[in-house]
Amino acid sequence: MLKLYNTLTKKVEEFIPIDPNEVRIYMCGPTVYDYFHIGNARSFVMADMVRRYLEYKGYNVKFVMNITDVDDKIIKKANEERRSTNDVTTDYINAFFEDITKLKIKKANVYPKATEHMNEIIDIIKKLEDKSFAYNKDGNVFYDVKHFNGYGKLSGKNIEELEVGARIDVNEEKNDPLDFALWKKAKEGEPYWESPWGKGRPGWHIECSAMSCKHLGETFDIHAGGNDLIFPHHENEIAQSEAATGKPFVKYWLHFGFLNINEEKMSKSLGNFFTARDVLKRYSAEAIRMFFAQAYYRGPLNFTDDLLAAAEKGLEKITNLVDKINDELKKNISSDVKPEFDFKSFYQRFEEAMDEDLNTSQAVAVIFDFVKEVNRVIASSENIDVNFYNDVKTFLTKTADNVLDIVDFNKTRTGDDKLVNDLIELLITLRTEAKKNKNYQLSDTIRDRLKELGIVLQDSKEGTSYKIGK
Image (tube, rainbow, N blue to C red; front, side):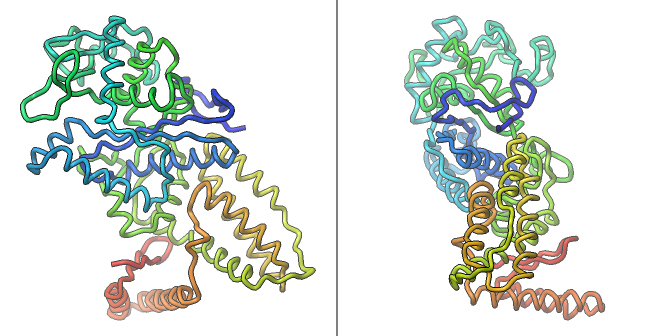
């Protein structure tokens, strides 16, 4: 039975979907004013693994990821570049889809855009106004936080703490400093829509309440996002949605930990970030996914080249076995050599790891144990029956491919690819020996000549790996 840590209840709970036939998930997607960074990618990839594991367990999953395409940051970017907001968002939406495809993230069922849901956004604001949860001040509509009983239940913050908080946005138009914008009055040169309160545009928080309700219903199973969204974004979503519908908004809240650089949260505001597309130029998608999977999804993860290079190196063990399996399947040998192998226990161990609050690091360890044991069996036997290799392929396909997507049987190396790999590994060995013998000129020459050919060597504590691509 799958158990998940629920941010709302602050405990690990048994996962029981509202509808046994369908799990409904909403994931906060990008604000499209720039390329998303590798910290955002961690949240996107981990949400993808959650979705894939639920599908592995037999659930039909409806996965919705929103796109915020109207926002202060987008307007600022458009003004800086002297372009229309539509041009800015179109470019970065296209870039977003390019990057998540390269990261092997499965497509959502729906990617709702804020600009395409103005009727729904206006309708929910009107409901809140009718119920006295919102008020209009000269074309700006604000949410009355103190009117909602239970504000702070997700983040654990209370009203008294928030009132003295240094980050409260001071705005003389608000009845209370805690209140937040649902609708913003139009300013000159900014995009706007007609509404009962005049020309304007929505606040960030109300967009998600409107879009999730339209595509998943008033109450749904899982809402996911990064830890940085717990407050105020997700807290405000709860306040808006539950006030509007009178029903619980979300059953399980999942939040993903920060990706740090030098123990500090990676963020665009701090300027200490790498875009996902830049990292993809240096490491494979499989290595990036492995890097994320080897850490607990709720905890912080330090971003280092050593760890990514180690993930790339570790994947070679799996890839080498995949190549061997594909070769043996082509031979299609039928024989009496049918090794005793406990596939069932490996499936059980993998599922036990994932069921325990998505312990992907333990699941990866199970896969490596499996690879080691299969290699031992292969080394000790000859002319093994093809059904054994079929069973090995099935296990790796279901776990390492379909759930974690750290390997792809359709992307394995041809004979020529393996020859290239062996030659590169030989050169890496020669370079390592040259460095040991303090022949740094030869070591540098090997590295530089390979780089000229588009083969980039990556040194780490784990050894040297390589990536093809200039």
